[in-house]
Amino acid sequence: MSLPAEARAVLAGLEACDIATLSAAVDSARQLLHPLLPPSRLSNDELRGTARTLGPLATGLVKSLASIFAAEALGGNQQRWFVLGEAVCLALDALDGLRPVLKASRQELDAQRYSFVRKLATKGLHQHALLQGKALVASLFASPHGAQSGALVPSDLHIAGITNLLICYCELVQQEPRRAAMLWADINSSLDSLLKLAR
Figure 1 (cartoon, one colour):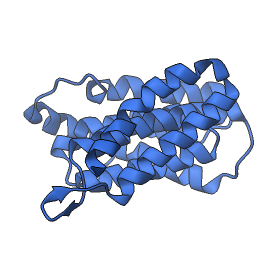
Figure 2 (spheres, one colour):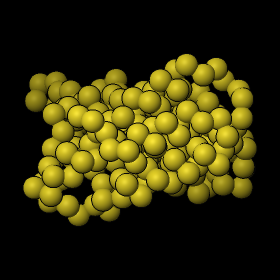
Figure 3 (cartoon, helix red, strand yellow):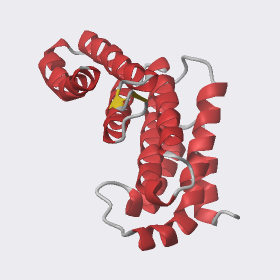
């Protein structure tokens, strides 16, 4: 499907080196994708119509960002990486909004999100990685993967998701020790969920 001019401009803006152009592209993407972002209250019928117009932009953002994160070495302008981290969160949240009408399975979308959590953490974007890690864990526990003798058991993705939350927690606490209690409270329910599932 051919992308509208606005969507093409957004994707082109992601490649910009200057912060102003990149930030403007992410702001435009946020405005365009707003109907899909939480708290979205679209019915499935409304989502199908929206998917035809906004789905290509959301998937295009994910593909472009995956290429950027894979191709560019660690380092460079940290402010630019921060804005790209915002774009990743925006794109993944928009895809989440489309889940009910996408052909991709929940497992595929969760695996994709996990891949981006790792990419964000590798670039030092631990706050973004923590936010997306929480979204990943929430999705995993909403529909746990894997079963043994009829009982649900933690999958590798459950354990990897929780591990990444702990890594991000440690990194963020090193940067801002005063946030330790707040950050721990933020991830504690995810840890409890894993323990309950493992019992």
